Every structure is written in C-alpha cells, then in structure tokens.
Length: 309
Image 1 (cartoon, rainbow, N blue to C red):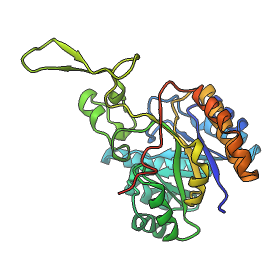
Image 2: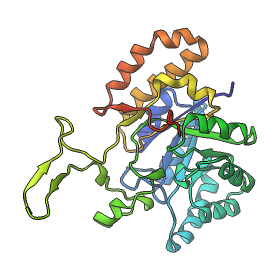
Image 3: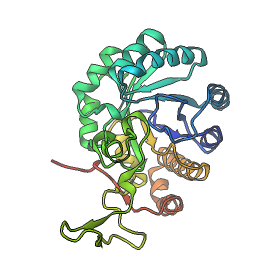
Image 4: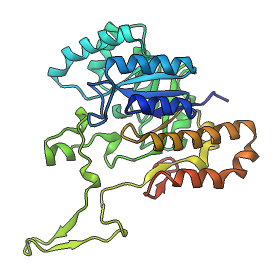
C-alpha cells in the first residue's frame, strides 16, 4: 500500500493556512505569474515565504504552479521567476510546458518537478518520458480511467509518483486545453486568464428569428449547457488507492477558505478512516456525503474514472 497524500488548493495565504489546519498533507499555490489561475488572489513572494514557513512548521509541503503553456515572450520571465524560487525553496514546482521544464532543470536543478495535467498525460510512455527527463511526479489526465491509471502504475518505476484529481470542477475541454475563452473574450485559458464561458448561461437562436431566444432547460438555476458536474470520489477512495495513486488532488484555487476547510476535513477523515478500518469508512459514508454536499450546489460525477472502452 502506497502512502496517500491529500493535496489541497490555496488561492491566498489565509486559505493556505486553512488547508494546513484542516488536514492537508500538501498545498499547491500560484505565484503572481506563470500559473493557470490569474484571477485568483495568488501569492507575492513574501506570502509564499510565510506560507511555506507555516506549512513546514506543521509538516505540510507546498508546491508552486508554473503551468502555463508558454509563448516566446514568457521565457525570459520564467527564468527570472525560477531564480527567485531557488531562494524561496518550495517543495516542488508544477510545470506543463517542455520549454519551461528545460529552464527549470537548468535554473533549479535540485528542486522537485511535477508535470501538470495540462500536459495531456494519458499513457505510460508519456510518464516514462518525463521520468527520464527528471520529473518526480506526473499528474494524470482527467480523461483517464482508474483501470488505465492502474496499468500505468504497473509500467513505470516505483519512484515516479502519480497524482490524480479526486474532487472538484471538471473542465469541458481535453485536459483543460480550452480555446473558448480566448476566442470569445481574448483572454487565454492556457495563459491563466480563463473567463469560464463554459459556465455562462446560454439560449438558442434560430437563424431566421434573430433576437428570439429559446432556452434549453436544465434546472431551476438556469441553462448551463457546457458546464460539467463536479468530480467527487469520496465513495471510491479504496479504488483510488488500489490504482496506485500517490496523491489525491482537490481542484479549487479560486475557492473560499470555508470550501477548502470543508473539503479538506472531509477527505482527511475519509482517508484516515479507511486506513484505520475499511468498515469504519463504510459506516461514516453518509456523513462524508452530507459534509461534501454543503459546499457546492452542483451535482456530482465520477468523471472518466470508471469509463470503459
């Protein structure tokens, strides 16, 4: 049995401290540049230092996102930023772009590097590729099933870690590589500026009847035809562990401290209960479901994790 890490998001220093207090083994955050959540409050370098000190005092790791798909103009800034991280010393940096990865290997050669889900990690060959380049961890594409993840686990080295999402919002696009925001608003999701047009309210308009809007009813809150249900695997922690996943990742760097506290506490208890006694985990299932249900109005899904070809 591999030791399971509970990885919690934080969009501010307050939320980082909340995640630590409520049971995170590790926290992932974004600095002021090169992460995929430009609209989050994000962290100044001083915030990062304070957050790392607080987390490490409680035995919790901190990972920094630098997972944009970089353009030419980004690369010099990436190098400068990594030189700053060399002094700040997070526990790992999360990267999706090969050019950014190459800069990290040169500038921060001793730092642990994780490959973001944004890199489309859908097969064991890709995992082996990144491992050969020096990556410590690869985040599985959300399009993978548990059966596929388990097969990957069996074909990669034991020291290469697998991280997979266990809870949170699901992007409608393949591995989060969405062009909709850029097309509709000029703000590039792959540069961290997603405006979430998949969550806007839409109506249909027939070509010869301009201005006549025909709603597509979904629920009492409105019509959100592109919007996925939220991933929730609280009932399937044994299956996630059996697949050989090292880190259970919660989505949500834009979420509030209350959301993070509720989700972190619930998954912490569920994981600990299962490790203590699987029957205890089963007995407390209604409580887990009730707690998780308090922090979202969306319905839940298991995503692709039980998908079969």
